[in-house]
Image (cartoon, rainbow, N blue to C red):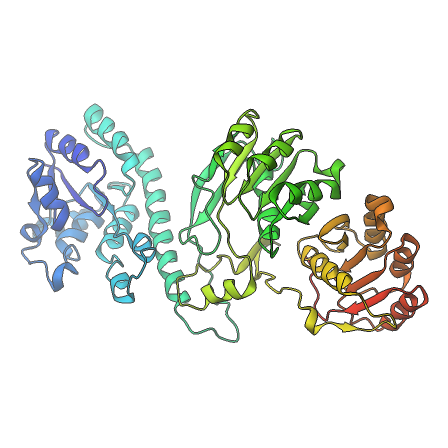
Length: 530
């Protein structure tokens, strides 16, 4: 009689698998909750303690950690000495291990859970069973995903055993499963450490789960998928967020990332439109429609086919305005029912319901300092591949603070110019360097970004703004190394400029501003985005 060990926290489908094995003449060894569950279903089970001749101890902390279990799993069937040892020690070979782990991640997510409760959900015996069986995949089948049970049942019924090809696939899944589980545990313990001078660990562990496969990547010849961290942290999940439209593409998600983070940096009702990973229109308004129309007018040519994000509910009036324009994605915290009635006429338009991540610095840091679990790469960090490795950094969470700005020009900015520059500098954080943002009031009128030199970025922003440069304000993500950009701004009728300062030639730019009556402010903070 062949032997299988079944020990699962998630009981989904285990009855069907156990019954198929039992009907095929297999002995089922189990313990604790799994044994009781199967017996209640009328399936005969051998207790682990009967196999080990040793009781469960420490309140169930130790059950399967025993040579009579692990020896039966790890013995190499083609090694005579291994098999002789099993026979001498009365150890029966184990050919199937079905195991999934304590719900550690689910427990951490529960409100009010204590560290003691979390620690008790760190599975010890389960990963040992899984890793042992996966290591010996040439003879042992390991199953940790209930979705695989039908495959096992089919092969057991058809040929009495599981093929080597499938055992190899299952071994890979098993090691990935335990690796992700350990990564989640490491992330949890990292979140409970006191912040240090250097918050970046020597060993970076990533626990990410695939949310969905994508049709292709940036281009049709590239394959792609979307993953999210086991602990969602400060960023809402895309899982289940889409309420209408075609499936999201790689480029949709990439653009959505920029739009989402930009819109939640705005401190009142706002809208962001992104096209090809670059903001093309950002505005505040008294209501969603006003914010959308102002953002759209910021660059109506680029906004065609764009990604739109709101930090406020979308109502029918706003939906009517958007209905007239071709858009790829609209994301908002929620949509009114009558807005959905309007937008459902555009069947391909993707609608996403995404709650906020953070709208204000104080709210963000208030959450992050509560000791709540934060994944290693949650809302606080960004990561990108480079040179075959990963670049990890804190996200740019610095908000413009006009009280810390220094006016260096002879002319003082007006209160309206200060408010506009604060808005424009907030937008600058989300524009690729070199970044130039022209704004009038709380509306962008021209954006120039991603250029290898700053004066070209200024010229592009001015060209996009057209006549709206008259009386506009300009924000730059970094200093002006030469006065040429200031002179271009002066020719366009721009009245106020904000930039970080710090160039050895700052005075030349200040002199140029004074010559043309432009108010100039040094913010002291750079906002590169590459």
